Length: 339
Image (cartoon, rainbow, N blue to C red; front, side):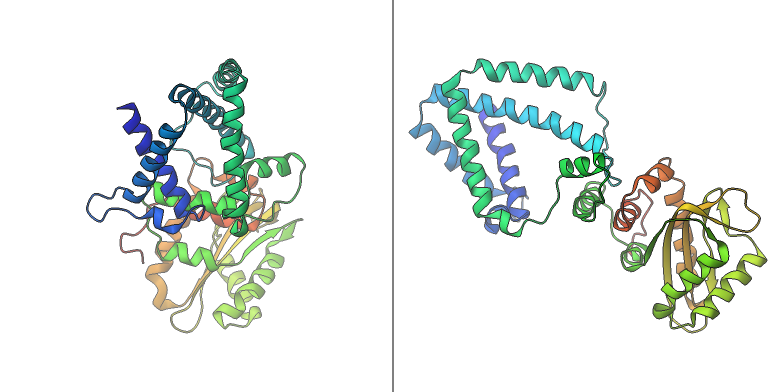
């Protein structure tokens, strides 16, 4: 039973590596009826049979146990790194209790057990790890463009700019798959929308001029006209929906046009009649025939802004792409038809 469980779990690792381009693509194939990674299962079984035939069984068990203990240490290390990296799209469905003390203690215990395995077993284990590193260097590393959470944490500690948001984007994709979220029209809109990360203080008029310049090409409307409409809309009724958050939205001439601009003002934007500066802005502009989607977009933004950790994640996002990935990974309800 233990052997079967080990083969099945290991085969899933091979399937995931194949899907990510770390192993030949044929290994990721699933059985059309049962959905099992049959190629990965066969590959794992053949590899294990080969090891049993070529190596001493007792030593093999010791090496396997050592590798398992090392993996436990790496799991704990991953928990520390992911927690401390503060990546905006890191949203675990389960939070480990008694963090960090129980995991520090368990890591120390694992290290003691590893040391007790003896030098020959450790050397054999190192050979396996060396072979894995050589494989990584030869095969998957060529196309590898991801950033590790460890590098994210190091740059955060060094107060460096994290320009590559591939890790944040990958976590967002994992969340979408885990929670079975179907991308809808609002998601597609966010993907192509401009995001402003403003430093310094701005007046409402200054911000509207900047936003109008950004939206003018996609809407085909003169920026001065857009700025005027935004000011007129603000004069009719305030668009600050709660302290620190504004959702200005206007109607423009034409058909089939809709645009969104997202802005974070680190030092705030002074909206008329508001005591607290606005730091999050979702600005929308669309034609009358897009009224239904206009309302759905408003609901989507309201849902995102009402998440309990919105302000913290909005503030902690390091780049505009992190902001985009945070919005795309929100828990809001998507429309079933994806539109």
